[in-house]
Amino acid sequence: MRTDVIVVAAGSGQRAGEGLPKQFRDLGGHSVLRRTLTRFIGQPGIRHVQIVVHPDHAALYEQAVAGLPGILPPVAGGATRQASVRAGLEALAADPPELVLIHDAARPFVAPRLIADGIAAAARYGAAVPGLVLVDTIKSVPEHGYVGTGPDRNGLRSVQTPQGFRYDLILAAHRKLATKGDLTDDAAVAEAAGHRVALFPGDPANTKLTLPEDFVTAENKLLAELADVRTATGFDVHAFAPGDHVMLGGIAIPHDFGLTGHSDADVVLHALTDALLGTIGDGDIGHHFPPSDPQWKGASSDRFLAHAVERVRAQGGRIAHLDATIICEAPKVGPHREAMRESIARIAGVTVSRVGVKATTSEKLGFAGRREGIACMAAATVRLPWRDDE
Ligand code: CTP
Ligand code: MG
Image 1: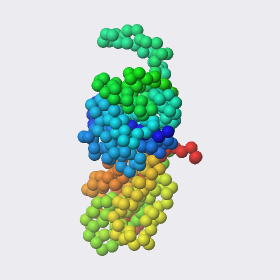
Image 2 (image 1 turned 90 degrees about the vertical axis):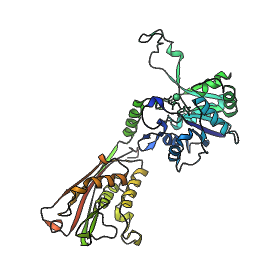
Image 3 (image 1 turned 120 degrees about the vertical axis):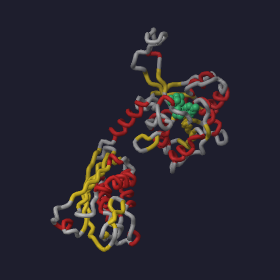
Image 4 (image 1 turned 180 degrees about the vertical axis):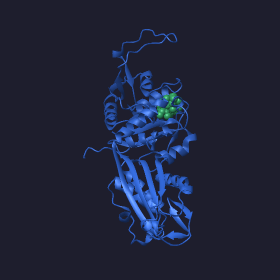
């Protein structure tokens, strides 16, 4: 059956604390909303995804959905979740689906099983929600600080999203209940409109990011998935030639000589590029950017490093650390260290605290000691998803 998904993302995330509204906050390199959307896109049976957002968040929204397929133009949300869902349902009316899944943007861990079960239960029952049994004893709190008797937890479920419905059923229910205040989920709307709502098993991992500490837990969960920690090294040398500056770590440093090379001869960025490529066993800089290829003549080396970063990201990896040791008698590196760290951090998309830059002379020994050129050693550490095939 034709199934569309509504993702409500128009809230302000009051309980999640300071900063951007929670659905736009970063979680391991992607916004919460983007993570949620990628869980639905491409799942069997899903046609379109309709996102509901606050108009003030248009720029954040554009960033979150950039490049994602199957997304309908966004629709503006309302003052309550209920009003936002209704706006999403109305937006689908022109080309209505048979079934609709309604999901909170703030639940980025929704799994394929839950999506498939939601579609199947909606088709079978017309209205169905994922529920979890309660493990804790529940108490009422009639007086502040004191507990009263609670309900029997055996008769209770905590309910999640995605909630699945026949589209015409839930649209009519929302229209009917439009003036009925703030019902916090769509099962309540369906029920208030007189429908029976079925249950299917929820997923304890499908948590809703609500409080500040939920973000800490979520980050840790993502990090635990990146359990394949790898370190690799890189090394590069370029010779001095006539010139008035050298490029090191993307920074132009005035000097009595320049460095020769096919590109801009930035030994630091070249060594770091090789270190990063090494972490994923993906060849070396010469393999990706052959010196024989005229298009790299004089090229600014930040693109080499950015390319290696992209290769790591494409495997779901995150950069934990980049470190470089520059070996030369001159120029002095110390005064430029912070600028170099910032430049490398910017190219690699990491915080400056994850970048180390050191320098040493070689006590006048060897080619660096004779001031014939500059060498750089580098190391990179990345975290990758642990894959079962290894
Ligand atoms: N939501 C919405 N429109 C609203 C309120 C909420 O689209 N007017 C969305 C939220 O963006 C979220 C989902 O509904 O994805 C679940 O709501 P909740 O967790 O309560 O989010 P917020 O209302 O944003 O958070 P808070 O209640 O802490 O302010
Ligand atoms: Mg809310």
